[in-house]
Length: 176
Image 1 (cartoon, rainbow, N blue to C red):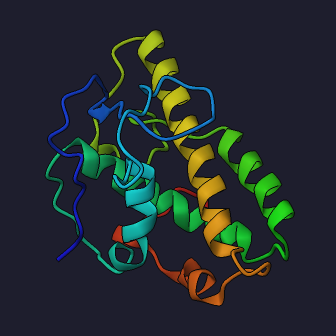
Image 2 (image 1 turned 45 degrees about the vertical axis):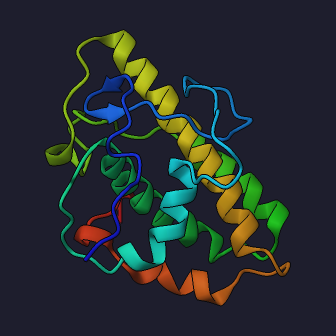
């Protein structure tokens, strides 16, 4: 049984069936300001927390918008870990994660997007740009927080890096 998001029932704006959820972040983007307490997991923390359990599943029943973000971030975390497996220190990882976050990527509805069956399409250019900004904001925050976890001891934690070979839903956001 896969772990599902606690954010599935949260009422918020959606673009292409992706909810624009509040996140704890210092990165610029369209995410609403975080107003939860420190003990509450935002969607980024939830994705990282459940990653090592969810990555083993080859199917995932979407119960809401939070799950759609969990799916996307789980695949993105795998891409991050692949990059981290080649980097020896935290500073190098932060730089690499920033580069990966801002690198051009496919959006829901685009031809090369591997998860189109889970998402909708943007209705216009403004929605597409706003969704791109939100996903970039999520990607930057994931890279930062994941680096903190993986390089907690100063070197890459092998118990995170070992997951680079796993394919959640038998899919990948990367070209390989």
